[in-house]
Length: 546
Image (cartoon, one colour):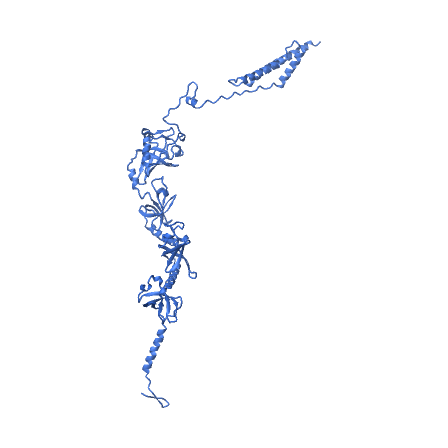
């Protein structure tokens, strides 16, 4: 039809339907073009493989142009990477160039894996997640690990169970190819730096395992474990995530062996769970209680009341431990050593002594024996043992000594005579000589000490009065010829003292001479001189004229 316009000019009919269809198709095309992705360099996107060609793989990444992955960007897939992909497979690719000269998008699988690895590591670092990684190499500072295409580093301080100085087994080279439980402790994308730690991951894992084990362990059960550390005070055993301690007293029934002699790190052992403390998270274990059969078999051969030889292995304030056979030991309480009261067992026994011991108690549930030396003395004498008065074992029969050494594989060393505090109980006491009161043995062995020289006291010098009397007598004798000569007094005193001194010097007297006896002649002379002086004075009075 022809429409008439307002000007009266006829206008041709327009096919509106065809124009509308054309407009709709173009609009749809314009709208659909807005769905294409705008790609940027460095992005990691997911695409679908459309075709596999000799010069690369065609991938649809949702862009206006298809993407191409060159073969040299697919090395992470291994040898012959084109054979490792299939049409329709979804892959992650890295945008190397949004649009090339040919109008294609250049992609890379290798870089995509690395970028994805960084994102995964960043997520694990933020969440504190532990993961497994394979060791690909090592250097003098630590181990190299590849995680999702990212090369990471594990310092030596964060490696567990590897000794850098060791060569071969136990060294850094032995860790290559192994899977380690790791945790990210530092990440820096800009510096291309990732630091991992096996120690942190292991601590976290062991903490989780320990909580689980503490809930599962029951006191009295026997479990398998692995020796993780050996110390002088005991052995640490790994029960599968948690370590328990077997104290030195619970390592072996044989007290003569040290933990270092019996166990090494890595040994698989059976342990007896003694105590579990959920509060302190400590586990007490026992190695010797996990194998009680040997102890029971040996003790079955002995009965209470039997006297057996035993070697002293250790002295304590409350008694002495003695080895009976193999790992079986018993305690000799300090009250069971001798009849008298002693302060310490070393007064009677020493370590290494072989003693006759009576079994007074057997505690099978606690694996303990009670022994007595005091009650075994009579039976020990019959067996051939000899004792001192102090209760010490003096000699051991040769047959018992030889049998014990062959059975236990140890040497029994007997003490010397100077090591005993008491005299032999069977030795007779030396008799004393009735006449002299001395022991003939003592006289023969030790010469008599010389008698001390007697002490000779010098006579006291004459007093001043005696000297005055002697002088007066001398004057009187000089004046009177009839009087007795006075010098005799001094002559009498002096020879008497000199003779006494000569006798003392020449021949020591049996008893010391008293000073009074030496001075006695001087005293007599003084009295005679006084009497003579008085007579002279009376005579002079008579001769005076009236």
